[in-house]
Image (cartoon, rainbow, N blue to C red):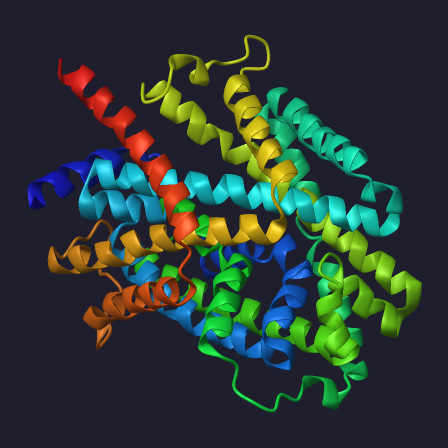
Length: 443
């Protein structure tokens, strides 16, 4: 078994040696923060308040504590497996190619359900300015246009897609900072006082939903093959990034709840915009709606640029039909993969709500986290090292167990059996394709 992972890492290291290790702590921290803070935070404060009322900030703290356990496992793994691919690479080195493949499928489920949910947020944000979008037919047409425009942009080439991502990166943070900076002076203390401890089921449901706002660390760690001194850089960057996002999220919740009170739960589509209208007037409402729109569009733009490449790779490797790996003869882009991915996401956006898609995405990502945390045990036991001394601390061996316990507790508390059934069906189907491919190659 040790020989297997050594051969695997040596093969992938040879590929990664061609990359330049130029990402330090500030750059990796910024990348993780940028990957984490997205459109979800413009909507989630109302959904969490609906379940917990004034005790909603408690869900953010509980989620942050859980994420500390998860990212500690990621830090240990990242310091031992400094290969491009992030969590996928950690799982593959620990368990082999098949389990790594399952982690990749889970990431794919997470990505496509997340982007479908964010398109719902995008259309709801535009609807705040253009009420005509309340019409179901017009709503579907707008969703179709969003996907259509991004498909055309990305089919025409990766440079166009990357340029669109760069254009919207900073714009999503400015409205949130304005919201917190101005709104903190308009909080009514009575609105944020909670008299009793919430029930465990309500807290668990809120944490499971809220994970959507914290997911992004694994995306920021994908370029691990280009990080300087991973054993030092990866742990520091993820803890700093988690602290920044947690503080910002709690402040956003406190401002929204402190200004709207119990009315916050009555604005599930545009809670921050409604809160901003209380202390910044109609201008503030427009700025937050624009921020939510830009953030959602930026997320969708980034996802349509990167995620379809997974379909392309799966088609290239023979797991799916080879036409998924088709390349446009003129623009040299994976056109079939991009169009297929967008069609599936469009169907999900039309048929489901943000809340439903967010929970499904979170269940998939927690299953991926579960594989990664279990893999840390093996990485430590085998003393896997791909680039210098790893990240070591007292009590390191118990962290994967604590993280796995939290994930299982959350599943037991919320009992998302319908989500397990959907994800399980996808894993079974893709596993059959994977095993057929292995069999054919051996033949």
